[in-house]
Length: 124
Image (cartoon, rainbow, N blue to C red):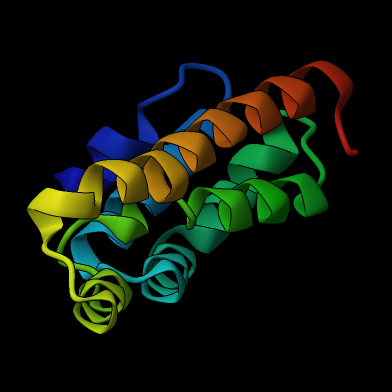
């Protein structure tokens, strides 16, 4: 059910669907590499077919996948976030706002810019 709902996102642009799927999986696992590996293992062939049908080069699909892993992977339950805060002697309350801007919001904005660029200009 989740697979079909994610594949339906983005209308005619599979890059949007791909970005959302990878971000959701990275957020759930708390890991960029975990989100990417699950997404590509379960949906990789499907997105490759969707990309070919939409005349999107495989390198663009890969680039968007790689950029998408860097968004929701840094949610508060991420091991690196917990470790960083412990080493710095800070709590989530004290510093997660700053971390969220740098590790979640900015990467998501860059992902949107990359999707728009890839949609308008193709491979870059």
